[in-house]
Image (cartoon, rainbow, N blue to C red):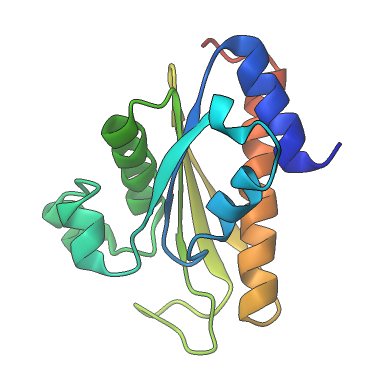
Length: 159
């Protein structure tokens, strides 16, 4: 069973759901989640928020947060995750933001990534420094995001 399928199985066992808010992954995380048969039982939807205005206007990321920390930050990733969960009513939200490359952004080099995870009693972010081209950085970000959620779900994080 692949990683996305394991995440769905755990969510379904717990009667929970997940939503995504993606920037640098551009919908790849949603594509992985929806490729699993029966995904509609635990994946409710997502937003590709590539532009800062979409992060703010659709996901509710506060302008002050962006001004203080930038969009390439743990704070933005968790705010995106929170926005996705709130917008869709999902139990869990995952937010991905960072620099896929080839150029840097906000003074961060390519491969700088933050993954936000928000759920019942949980609000955390992973900071990743990845190597490789755009596709490799995007793919690894998705794998790390799903792995982190799987870990939280399998260790009995309250739900």
